[in-house]
Image (cartoon, rainbow, N blue to C red; front, side):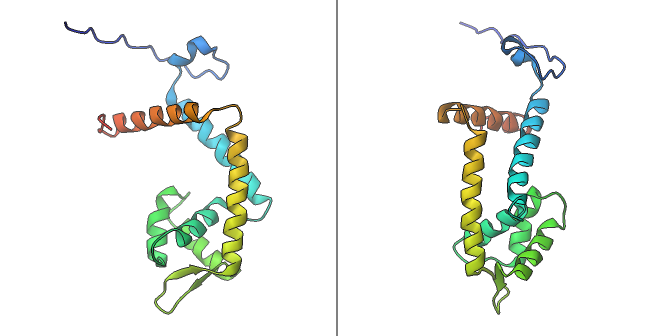
Length: 163
């Protein structure tokens, strides 16, 4: 038995007030962009209140998170795709060295200082609190389903529809 193709849903203009029944017609780019901007702004505002930036948190986690101490170049190379510009992560490394949260050894490998580890732990607690706020009223199952849909959409447009 041959299955018929699924009918296509028309694309409607972005509407922040769209009723639930109309959400299937809403543009994913609008809603994913809106969610990204709102969540990032909320997180960065929370971090600013304790004089830290999100890229600083990324660097602290990256320096802490590998089997060996990374070089400055490795940290910059790995985190630059997430940053707001090509020079941001290199600047953050300099800020954290100046602040005394990072140190470089004789081989130019980066390590957290005790103050850097304390900051990383404090930031981890803050990020966990912010995550709880963002996830209020959303079950883990709903969250996983949303991420699976987004992951599939990314795979569809990047040419790997089988992912």
